[in-house]
Image (tube, rainbow, N blue to C red):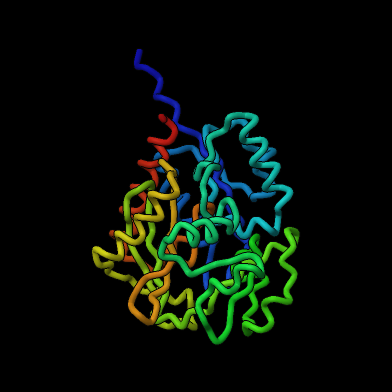
Amino acid sequence: MSAAPAARPRLLYVTDLAYPAQGRRYCDEDIALTARLRERFDLALCHPRDAAALMEPFDAVVVRNSGPVLHYQEAYDAFRARARALGTRVYNPLHGRGDMAGKQYLLDLTAAGFPVIPTVDRPADLDRLPAAARYAVKPKAGADSIGLRFLPYEELAGLDYAEGAGLLVQPRIDFRYEVSFYFVDDRFQYALHAPDPERRWVLEPYEPAAADLDFARRFIAWNTLDHGIQRVDACRAPDGALLLVELEDLNPYLSLDRVPEDVRDRFVDAMADSLDAFLKA
């Protein structure tokens, strides 16, 4: 009698297929990704509001294009608490130090001297920012440019920086273009850039120089996630230097429709291998 085939890992894949992301189609990316991942895993999809109630029978929860957490903060907090109570594996792991934990990392990296757009969160520190024609003001809990304003310096001191308001201030950089570096675990996969600063999600393949990859890898190393998908967003400043814009480690959109098929295939294989290793760790 032949042995029964080994059970395949069961994944709960969290996505909001209906989220209206500007310039991106979350649903297409996740439909394509899950179609490939089903070759190696038993997989079910659910909305982020349902993850806490549905996670228990699964070997791991994969958080993908689930939209800004601030739209369902109570449900997300309940999901994190239940995952920890059950010991459920979550991919990306919940101890990420980037956007997963809010925007505090921009302040921490500024203070530590990393190449990041200088960021402060209180009036007493405004004089630490370089001179600029206007300054970006955004909520610490923001995402997708929600709540973003651009103000002159003389209006910054009068803002409400109380803990409940949670504001960040940065100089508006007259950057040449934005570029994103995509990683699975600590392995670089591909890079994309937006040649037109006014069209953030009109992306083209980008061939990074060695110095560009060194830049991106500094933030991957700083974040200390052994497993998971991360996107390092940067801008090319007028002097040619790269500055970090965002370290996305919760649910980074991958723009897989913007890369060649062989690059897309390698990414999916790398993600599946990473999930296998994560489940066995």
